[in-house]
Length: 439
Picture 1: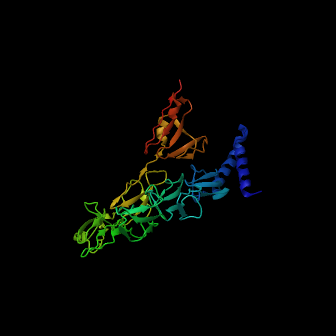
Picture 2: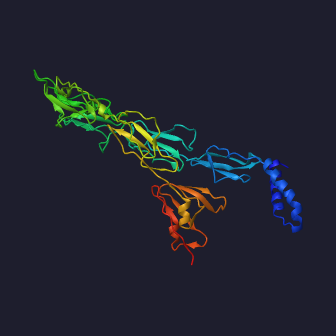
């Protein structure tokens, strides 16, 4: 017989002896023996320290020496068997050797025209992160390109990829030949050209194609007269691709064709600047334009990300971030993150940060004053500690924002509307129902 079973049997035998009735005439003869037994037992017993910690689990309720204790898994983990221990003779012994393993979120989902990469795990379990990217010729149009396996499933919605489109050709002298009817040219689309005026000749390639980054492989052609008059030099045509590459745009005009020696005025696009603004005005010389170039403005950088109450930044903080940078946030356990879990630096300004909504914690004094108790009824967004004095009830509950919890009236009390026994947490505030004594 094992020592644990033997000790359990001895405890049961002792309890039976303690409750056996004794005739009055034998009380005197047993008193000495009883006193001797009481004085020896404490010397033989040893006190246990606090129950040992279990990885990814926490103790349910208070512990009493000689009584089993049970562990439950933390949010994000699920049990693989029961986890129970007992203190006997000053030592903690295992009753059930279960453990907590990471919860699975399942497949995060595929997206059209894109793929994802599993970043920091080998499977889709709690804490895993997947990062989505678009195929060549497509661009991410969603603010979030990552999903994280959290305690209640995958965060964020599936991202969306759209085709990168090449700009339309705006030249009145050429006729565009293409099978595309909607005017939207994506990667691989080929267009051909011919002159509208048969007396003119096509100058440049007769066909061009749209590349994966949304630009034409070369500048579209133009049409010019075959007859070159004496002392007349070539004109210039402003090309959309060249302006895009140099972060500039035409200023105060939609004109695209300029004669020899004619001035062309440009300006920097938003968030870009040029050291010498005078260089934004250039001349057309013999059909050639030397485009000015604008660089990203230093003011387009963002400072430190905005702080959020109760929350913290996951990544390491810096004093400055370039445009397009992203920073992620997280909330403490039981807090609810409202909004996107990251912010993006957009031309010198951070996007709106998320909010950590406070949870609610049930208080015994409020329940006693309202003649109610916590019913042990697992609900979403609710984490309760079981009351092992009466397993039908919970001792304490933590309720996330928006989560519901169910109360019951104490024996001898009732409430007119039973629906009021269910309360919902609102940013740390939990309304308590009141039960009245039965008449």
